[in-house]
Image (cartoon, rainbow over all chains, first blue to last red; front, side):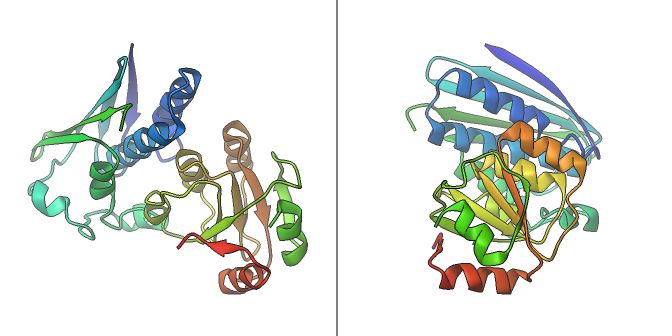
Length: 138
Length: 114
C-alpha cells in the first residue's frame, strides 16, 4: 500500500495531519502500538521540519508486510552540513518555530532513534530528502 | 492516581473529557518543549504544559499521551479542542503554575517518568 501527502511549508495549522493519517491507517492494520509510535514520531518530526524550514514537501509512505518505508522530500534551503544537523542541540529554526515547542535541535536525532534505517540527502537551495525505514519486528 | 483525583487535587477545569474519571494515570511529564515530549518512551503519561498551541495536541497524539493538563489558565482554542476530540485526548486546565501543579501532584503520589 502506498500513501502520498502534500505538506505546505509554513502552515503550522496543518502540521502533523499527514502523520496523523498514517497513524490511523497503522492502527486499522493492527500494527503493534510500539511500532506505530516509533513510526509516527519519526514521521511527525520530519513533517514539522518541512513546515518549519521548507516551501513545500511530499510525504510518501509505503506499507509492506513487515516494513514501512517513508520518503519525505522537500523544496527548501537544504542542509549544508548533515553531520552537524544530526548533532543534538544544533538548530536553525526560527523564533516562531521555537515558540511552538520545537527547534531545539532534537528532531533529526529523534528521527534516527525511531527508525531502523535513515538516509538523508540534501542539496543547498534545492531541498532535502529523508528516507526512513522501520521494520515491524523492531 | 485517577483522573478525578488529579482534578480534585488541583481544582482543575475539565475542558474535554474523553476518558472515565476512574482512568488511572501512573506518570506525568512536564514540558513546554515538545521535542522533549517526543523523546519519551513511556506510554500512559499525562503531559503538564504551559504551552497552548495545536502542536501540543498533535504531539500528544503521536506520543500516545491521553491527557494534557494546561497550567496557569492558558487559553485553549476551539481548534485545539476539535483536534483533541479527534485524537481522543482529554484536556484539563488549572490556575496553578507549572511548579505548583507538579509539586501538588507529586506530593499526592503521581510518579515522574524518570
